[in-house]
Amino acid sequence: MRQKTLHQPFEVYVADMDCWNERPLIYHFFEIVRIMDGTGTRETNRNRFRYQPGSIFLFTPLDCRGFDVETPTRFCSIRFSEVFLSEYKTEQDRERVTEWLKQLETIFAHHNRFEELLIRNEGDCQMIASLISLLVAEYAQRQAGHEENLRHLVTLMLNVITRNVHDGRVADTPGEKQALINRVLLHIQRHVADPEKLRVDYLAGQFNLSPSYVGEYFRKYTGESLQNYVASSRIKLVAQRLTHSNLTVSEIANELGYTDESHLSRQFRKHHGTSPTAFRKGLVTV
Image (cartoon, rainbow, N blue to C red; front, side, top):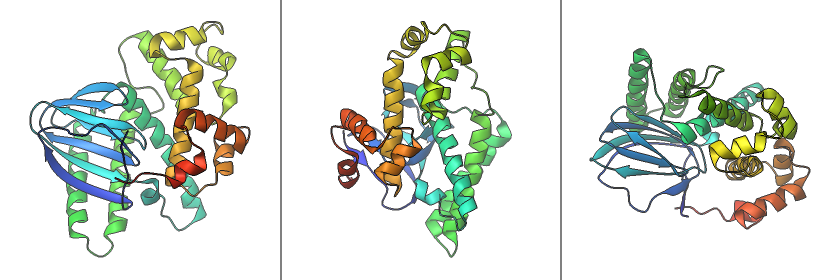
């Protein structure tokens, strides 16, 4: 699978596409895509969703993403790395942004699995459209102080998006069973670094399921085992940390709840066929 990285912490562009060749790719950055014109289908991590003018899609680092274009499509892409949002002067600001990025990953991951982002408030729709226009103009002009202005504009837009997709509850989805599995998946994403909160007995108590039924229930509604989903989610975060941070493998292991560096390395090699160190050194730039 081909991969794509950013050559700088932040990029904005508006483009047209009649088709989507050499896709999907794995991208090593966050991305917000707003469809300006055209129709088709968005594909993310083997999930497919319709798009139309005004649709907004969220992508996290290492998502496999692409588009199946039906009518000529014009879109705006806002791409940024963790580095772009974490360039703050004080330790307090750094800790605040780190926690915010973790929440952002959860929100983006949920919507990549289940649905397009729906901005239900008309005022928020207009605000996001205006912010994107300002971002495009500021990025094109690149006058003095433009980087700080871009950072503030992105942060404001993400705050608007966040209040539309996550207010402490799972977004509405049809059917009680579907809503429950959404809550289970969000819980796993939020606590992927805390093995105790991912134990079968803990999940059973949290979601009022029989311990003996948790695994069967999870496989029924997701098509994969609970153990495999947890392991894959954690490895995805490891890969993100290796790509976007200067943390050592040992520090990543400690952050994400692995027993030690050797445990992380064994699990990483199972998924990627290489060691974390080799993965970090061999990232492909396209």
